[in-house]
Length: 118
Image (tube, rainbow, N blue to C red; front, side):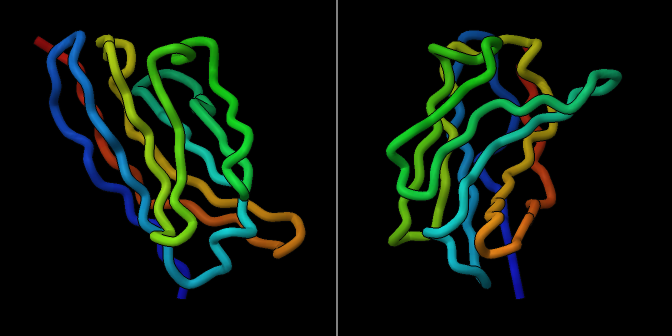
C-alpha cells in the first residue's frame, strides 16, 4: 500500500524557517520524480518545487526561488523542503507528490498546514 506522509508543518513567524518532510512507502521511490505543491485559501494550487529521481536536478516557483530548497534521500525514502525567510503569503496547505510515467504512478500525501504569522 502506498503512503506519502508529510510532517514538519506548523506556525512560524515571518522571517522564520521550517523544514517539511515527506516519508514514502509502498512504491519504488528512487524511480519517481518528487514535488511539493501548496494550496492557499482562495488561490490556485501552486507547484512550489520539484526534484528528479536521482536528485541531480531541481526546479522552483519564482515565488520561492532563493528561499526554499528541495532535497531527497533515496535510502531513507524521504523528501524534504527547507523553507527559509518565510512570508505570510507562504501560508498554505503543502502537499508532497510522487510521479513516474515509467512506473505509471502518481501519488499524493494528505497535506500539512504551514502558517506564517506574527
